[in-house]
Image 1 (cartoon, rainbow over the protein chains, first blue to last red):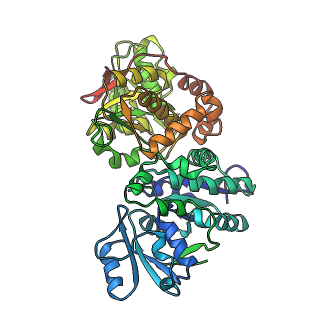
Image 2: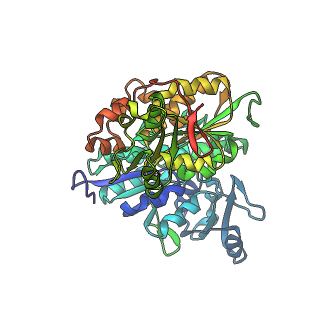
Length: 244
Length: 244
């Protein structure tokens, strides 16, 4: 709970890149990891389609070991499915009967890296636009000092994660249970307010979105920007993500 | 010059924290360091009042050595003048006849750290609101691939540096000589557009500004947010900043 300002309120802050996580982490109980395009969207989708757990792994070697053991494995680097794997981080890869009851293994450029970094020291929840309202409702129902960690793009700031963080921040602050006077939170709120009527339009200039468009991923992007497709909040426990 | 997109255009991008500099630096010829509150504002002010050079130093020990040699030395940590020093990073410390013709030594929490980081590998210019138009005019007159490096607050994102970077980005993009599709640049443009009618009002919620207000620095802040007080562009050459 907040030590400064109003002692009845909890704190919410946004960290724009996993590279800066160490500067922020001391002050927070839990971390919400956001990687809208596409890791945390894919994770939410897998659970919505019945996955039992998602095991985030650090590197391709680990992912290969799981694949050899017969797991469904998603491996993405720089927006593409890694050679030798069937699946990447497209949510559409996890919208089928095969994932039901399974443990899905996933390694991605940004999102799984952010999850590992945060999970070393913090309770970690997974957010995307797909489970936006569920995450907001949970954090209002069980308020806690929470850091919203944008996965970014290769360590750099990105718009879509920042806007999703702004959406969560706005709702938490409006609930009256949270406070924040941090510059990163203020910036994410402004970006969200600017973007919220039309995420797609706002993001059309975005470098990362354009990068994905070049990979013909418009269908993925439209889906990932569609709020509230699931009520599930994945949480990290003992090396894997499970339903809360 | 840009290799992607329009080959006739140069690139401008914003880096929100010195902690992320290594992720951005490869693609740029020169770096503009921004620390509105207050290091780069103080540096611009010292030059405007006749300083011959400003020597940024890394730590208090180095600063003390210069002080013992008789230099005018500014030493600031966490917004306060370091014990044993007369001056900090307030621009008002450098608005007097004493600085004329002198080499001023400066060590600060954020700004001088960013300068050292960038100067290891790049040509470095100094910007603040105080020399905003001069920096813009120069970069339009001599276009180059340029990274705008916000010094932040203890490595974290801050609003005032991001807005100043947005002001520079907007003018460069409007000149037609530059292009940028980077998410950080887009975000800084939105923040600047939102803030530009009233910097003071926009920043009033900012954590860093409030931190400084607690130190009774409202006069400093108002001055630092006043554009175009000088035409001077400090540039880093062989261990010191000099007038370009």
